[in-house]
Amino acid sequence: MERTKQTENLTQCGNKSKPLLVAVKSACYQYKSDLKYVKNVSKIWYGKPYRGLITKISIAWHNFYWHVLKR
Image 1: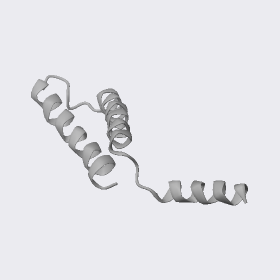
Image 2: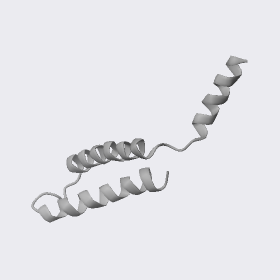
Image 3: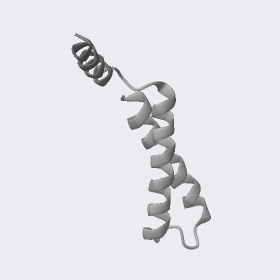
Image 4: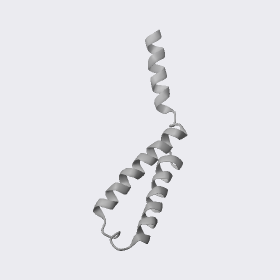
């Protein structure tokens, strides 16, 4: 009897959506990772400091949208 309750709880937890705080943390970690990757790979930042701000904003928006709004 107890084992079936544990199984039901596990399956129910899998169906629930992530809490907002977990989704925001996930978006922040992914933002940091993406920004590090873009800085190391992209050559558009050399000599163009304004491109850095635009890139940071677009990466932040992308991660917020996919990890928080579309969850």
